[in-house]
Each structure stands twice: as structure tokens, then as C-alpha cells.
Image (cartoon, rainbow, N blue to C red; front, side):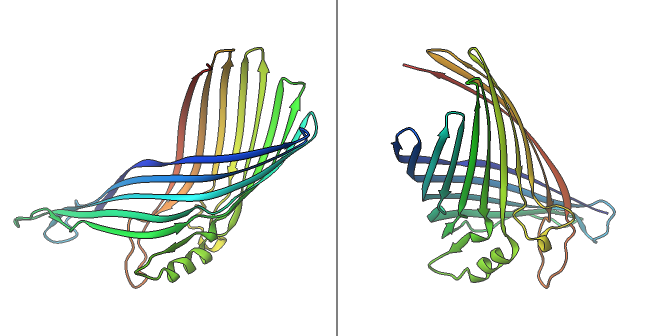
Length: 291
């Protein structure tokens, strides 16, 4: 049989600077807006290998393909929101996040391949370093939220976020992305994300718990092998507040299902893939000092 394996290492993140303004009308209505400047950096190193253990392919022992990609970019977005407090024990809010325009996305990439053949010498081969510049527009988001204050010791909040995943767009000065954008419109759809959380405060200690359900971004026809990429989150935490310092401890458990195909071929040749159940455990510690 052919033994196939793939390992991928990813690093990076998105940071954002916000320039905000707010207004308060009679402690009943709160208005706010901000301009966000995003900075993105993402690195992916992938290693794909095949080993011919049963001599299915003459001469071949194994081969390995390595693909490295580094993506950077900066973007800008606008956020607007309103919070209404009709009574002391309730808060209601609505916010809109505009699409983020990444006008200067940049990719650096390179590939290399090595192989082992029976009685035939081989050497590692590398592609020339490549780069590409393009534009990315992320989806629009709209959120509605409500929070209930319980006797000044407890809090229950919920928000529902609507994301139009089909609104993502790519563009470039030297190429047309019309086929890619058409594929995004047909493959993805708008869907909602639900988040519910609660907090109970006992003296200087706060106990927290939360639940999140993120819907699938795919149209029904695009869901493969029962994998729809929806996600479930469970969280818990503990916080200590003092006059001069605070400490927060948090834990988040997340679960999702995905379907992965290692590569694609021309002429609509189907390549076998695998269903992956993905589980993450995240621990967060925050410490602050007030001056």
C-alpha cells in the first residue's frame, strides 16, 4: 500500500489598533464608533510524503513535498454600535462591523521536493522563490446583544452575530479573480454565531462560564462527508479584583469537524480525503496592575 502523511505547522495572528469615539445621552443611550487598523502575519509550513511500502509503484521508495508560505498584510475597517439601557437591570445593543479591506496583501512562497528511488541517485530540488500581491475583503458582520444584571452580583449575557461569508472578495492589478469570487458566492452563505455567558461575583472573586455555537459557513450542497466546519465552545473562568490589581484565569474547550483533501488533480479527478474531529484546549492568564 501507499502510506500517505501530511504535517502542517502554522504560526501568526492579527493585531488591531482602534481609534474610538463615544457619546452618552442621559445614561440611557450610548453611541460608539471606531476605525480599526489591522496588521496580519501568517506562516504555514507543510510537509506531504508518500511511502511505497508494498512496491506498488516500480522503482519508487518514497518522496516528500515541502511547501512554505508567508502571508502579510494591513487592513482597515469601521465599527458602529449603540447600547440602550431601558432599566437598571437590562442592556440591549446592536453593532455593525464593516468588511475589512486588506489592500496590500503579500505572499512569499517556495516549494521543494525530494525522493528515494531504487538504485537511482536523486537530489533535492527547489523551486524559485515566488511572491504575489493582491487585495482581500473580509465579510460584513452584524451583532445583536442583551445582558441582564442580577442584584449587582450576577450577569447573564447573550449575543447573536450574523456573518455573510459569501461576501469575501479577492482582487489584483495583474489578474482577474472573477472565477474565485463566483466560487465563494456559490460555496459559502450567511450564517449566525451564538454566544451565551454568565458571571457571579462573590466579594472580590468572580466566577464565569460560557457557551458558543458557530454555524457552518458552507451551503448544504458543499458540506462533505458530514463535515460542515461548525464549532462548539465551552468556557470557564475565575477572576480576582482588588483595588490595585486583578488576575483572570480562563479555559476554553472547542470542538469542530473538518474534511481535508491533501491535494487536487485536473479533470475533476477525485482524491480521497479524511474527516477530522478537531479539539482544542486553551488556557488564558491575565494579570494587571492599576496606577
